Every structure is written in C-alpha cells, then in structure tokens.
Length: 264
Image 1: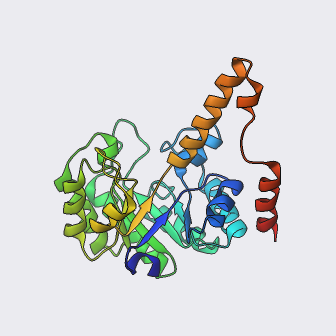
Image 2: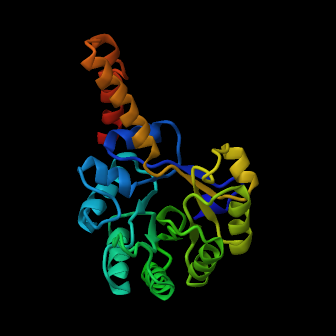
C-alpha cells in the first residue's frame, strides 16, 4: 500500500506469462499486475465471461510472484463466484497464494446485464475487504465506461461506496476525458485511484496523470496487444516470404538470461 500513498504513486504494468513478468521486473518496475483479458487470450478464451477459473488465475499469479519476487496484483474479474461469500473465498485464496493485491469488479459475466446492481456490487467489495483483514490491497472497480454505461454520476457513486466499504484503491477504466478523471479523483479523495493508461479521449503522460492526482497506472492487456501486433507484422512478413523481417526479436541469449534469474 505504501507504493500508492507516496508522492507520484506507481506504474504497475500487466504481465501475461513468466517471461513478460521477468522482463518487466528487469526493467525496474516495483510491482506487477495480472491481466484477466491477456490471460484469457493466452488460453484461447474470452475475458469477462467466467471462462477462466479462479484456480487457473491463482496459479498464473503465483507463477509471476515466484519468478519475480515482486508484489503482484491480481486482476480477478468479479471475484469468481455468484455470492459475496464466493468473493471472500477468492480473497482468502489470493492471500494464501501470496498476492499483494486483488481487484474486484462490478461486472456480472452476463452480456445482457454486464454490470451488477449497485447493492450487489457494494456487498461484494465489502465482503472482499472483510476477508482481506488488511493482508492484501483490495481494489474496488466499476466497469461502467467500458460496458456502455457512460454515467459519471453513477460511477462516482459506486466508487464512493466502494471506498466507504473499505476498498484500498478505486478504479474505473477509461473515463471519457481528463475532466471526468479529475472529478473521480476529487470525489473519492484521499483513496488512491488507478487509471488504465489514460482517459478515453487522449493518451496522457505519466507526469500528466500524476498531476491529475492518479496514484496508480496500469496497462491491462495493452502490453500483450502490443506484443501481438509485433507477431502480426512478423506473420505478414512470413507470408510474403520475408524470413529476415519475420525472425527479428530479442535473442535467445537474452531470454535465457531472464529465465535464469527467475529460476534463481
């Protein structure tokens, strides 16, 4: 939690496998997050539809923590379960796995009603906080903006209620613009706010986000998407017969060096 309350906060990139986690650790990042979307993609599944199990995500997060020895924040969708008691069990399991943080969304996994009702969402966050007993940082998250509900007032209402329920960090991915982001930060102060890259309308710098009061910056699946774009370009080169362009990248010596650090 100290990383969130210091001046400037932190940038917390999201890894999707052991090597990506080791690369981020080697670059000097002080904490790493999982990405439910990236993890699901690596397994050939969809995010936010309960297609990845709690146990799969726990093992994934445990691996990242063991390899890097850094604090790991688990992007655990809706907490994996129908009831607040299920969410509490997920938090207990995350603590047992050594995670430093866990995110609980107000999503439902139901595409027809993707956002849970207000009381249900708040009760799930409260259950996570009660189970945490201060042993793990709990992030309360509303996905209004990315689920077709561009309601700033309801977003602030939910985040404020999550804070009142005891959430340590608050998160609403992709507010429409900087004004909306500042409104969120101001409304929930002094609880730290996480932002996914930037507001929806413009990618800002880390310094600009810090000036707006953001305390944690995460990247969700976007580093994974960046890597997949490189693969797509290499695939196009391969189809065109350009072996040289298709086979550029970091050396196996570099990969072996990073993996050796993880095993040690």
